[in-house]
Amino acid sequence: MVKHFVRFLRDILFGQRRKVENLDPLHFFRQLSENDQTVLLDVRSPVEVAQSKIEGALNIDILNANFHSKIEKLDRSKNYFVYCKSGRRSKQACKLMNRIGISNTVNLKGGILAWEAANLPVMLS
Image (cartoon, rainbow, N blue to C red):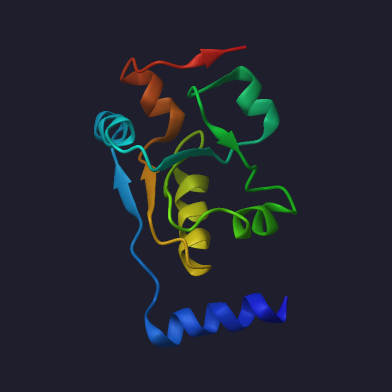
């Protein structure tokens, strides 16, 4: 816990925080498919994921108590394209990821709701 607090303070004091990039579904889809060093990250609950998801997404629930420890283990050299239902939790996840040194994050503006409204492909259970 102290280690995380020290990192958080360091980021604030030395300006290592990054503004979260928010992309609409079409731009998100294009950039996701153009880069082979990406990880698609779904931060919704397992119940939400069971309803529909974007193919290939890794699920780490932001509301789960072990979210922070799981994102700590992610490869910092990858690009993370993050989504949730509406874009709020994924934006928060991007901010948390930026604080621990994963600065290459992109948020899906409007979440999977906007993705589906743009008629982009989803997997249904």
